Amino acid sequence: MKKTQDYTKWKDTYPDKFVSEDKVFSNIHRGERIFIGTACGEPQYLVQALIKYVESHPKDFFDTEVFHVWTFGVAPYTDEKFKSNFRHNSFFIGNNTRDAINKGDADYTPIFLSQVPELFYRKLVPVDVAMIQTSPPDNHGYMSLGVSVDITKAAVENASTVITQVNSHMPRVHGDTFMHLDDVDFIVPYDEPLLEYETEVPGEIAQRIGNYVARIIKDGDTIQVGYGSLPNAILLNLRNKKHLGVHTELLSDAIVELMKNGVIDNTKKSIDRGKAVATFCMGKKKTYEYIHDNPCIEFRTIDYTNNPLIIAQHNNIVAINSALEVDLTGQATAESIGKIFYSGIGGQADFMRGAVLSHNGKTILALQSTAKNGEVSRIVPFLKEGAGITLNRGDIHYVITEYGIAYLHGKNIRERAMELISIAHPKFRPSLIEKAKKLNLIYKDQAFIPGKKGEYPEDLETYRTTETGLEILLRPVKISDEPLLKDFVYSLSDQSLYRRFISRRTDMPHEFLQKFVIIDYAEEMAIFAVLKHAKKEEIIGVGRYFIDKNTHTAETAFAVRDDFQKRGIGTELLKYLTYLAQKQGLLGFTAEVLVENRPMLHIFQKMGFDMQKRISSGVYELRMMFRE
Image 1 (cartoon, rainbow, N blue to C red):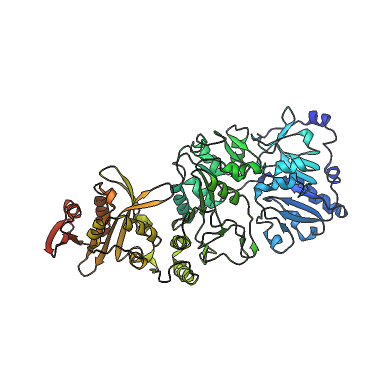
Image 2 (image 1 turned 90 degrees about the vertical axis):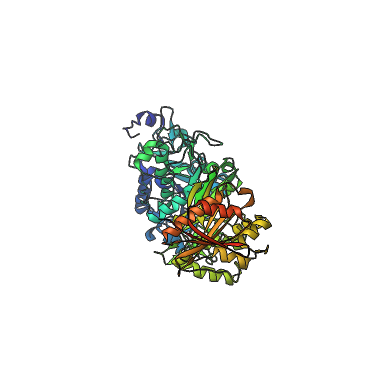
């Protein structure tokens, strides 16, 4: 990619384009608008040369507006001493411009990034000067925008003056990246290493979140994911997937690694099959080398990659994004912390809405449960006053933290609140419960067990295959499971209800059901047998035991949905309950079984317990001790 370039031919052909920096910048006038290339595509030398020119010609630049998507490198034009020369305007907020924007010394334009090119084409945001960076021209005079196509291509096509830093370190990338020397007004050859983005090594919390996200992504899905340690952890957890596709805004090091390993091959994509499609790249030098002249990768303009209608054409697309806060009703902000501007709308709203429109599309919001070293919950009753609502209540299917997965799509407000409380940090759950009650988001009598005893034991989740070949998930009950349990109970026949509860009662109100889902895991255990569907769970069996500390035994019972009986589900439930009870140091089970309930009695008998039984009023009273 990097080799010595001879520009003699082009200087002879275009002598007016190859001039000194002073000559270049003398063509910029007071009050004009200057676009600067995005992120790692920023023309660093040009920016620094511009600043030197302004320092030596301060009266030539007044009220010049500098704008871009995101500046990743130097941003000297935000310095106080250039206040009369430059006014900074950003479509997205980065670390080096955040303070200036919140102090009112710079501007932020909130907009869906997919719509920025239209601002240029319609002259709603005029572009007087575009300062960009390209690869050297090929034999035909075509240069590539390389790692930064995004809104840069539209800026170039609409600018009155285009200035390019030609850099042999810039990769030549396939797709909608090319522009001809005829389209450029001034050429400044200057080689320098591209800016590199160093991803943080994912910590334990990020890895846990990544593991949960990986459960939702299936072989053959097309993914969109952002940048940072959390997206990196998510991508690391996809190493065992097959035939994934990519249609995304940002191409990262982690995506490239999955391409190198064959995990991402784009063979199942609905459109742009065989191609990983992105609009810009941030990464290390080896990533830039990989994308150079690679026909498997195409960079397209942002009004294509981020267009919700294009995104929606991808079947099975999974949009994975993050947020600063999520409230208990399921709306989120990714752009501000209350009244403080933090980042921007960016592209996530475009991708989330496109995925919602896609056939079998999914949207995932992944975030750490707390901020400020665990002192602040990122799951809140309502977003802070002044926060921009980046994603509304209909945009988000899944919210994932290190404490689990909350599925919101199609859920009412009460169900959403309980789902989100169940994945909040345990120390904030009691206050979230109380605030949700005051806001009438959940039942006024909603029970809750605080502390470790009420914390969901995720490590007890396990997949089993029954003796009839049915794969089921066995997992503990969650505080958000009341709707699922209600569906299960009302799916049982009157006979099954009577056998399970030894009662003719057929109604199961909230007051009754919540006693089954709000449990102290140190005192009792409830296990669901679950069928996992694409976007939902279905309970087909329930097993439970209550510990008697005086005898070191537990009273147990289970029930299986009528249409799934005689398929080995009850056996798997009892086997797992037995394993868990022995793990807790219990000596055995007790149970009451109706004499007529021969299927349940048979399951107990075939477990090989040391069983004693007696009959009282048509009910077997069983005492079943575990064998060594």
